[in-house]
Image (cartoon, rainbow, N blue to C red; front, side, top):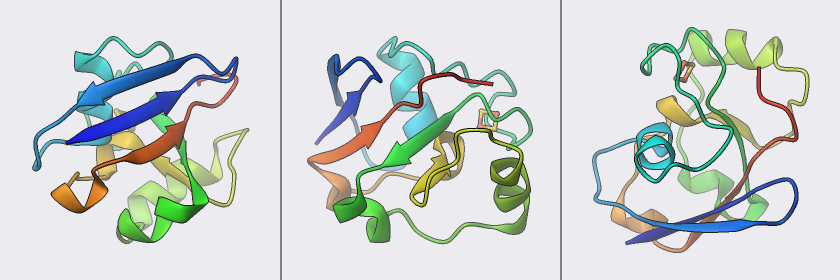
Length: 105
Ligand code: FES
């Protein structure tokens, strides 16, 4: 399956993925710029902030309290913001589009 990451300057990165990994891991594995995953997916750094395309947002699952707390400190938070490390990907996300914020924490 494939996910497209779109940078703030519109550069697209199409990444192949297998279900069970996370958006952060896919971005890091594919060297998508701006997704650092500094805390290794512990929901503790906010460097994996992504903005999900509105059409796909309802496929990304619930936002847990810890994620909500990190997101609330994210300057560029949008209505469909998520922490990439907290979004487990499934085959249902094939074709999903996510945007990268202009600045990353
Ligand atoms: Fe640190 Fe997601 S990788 S919060």
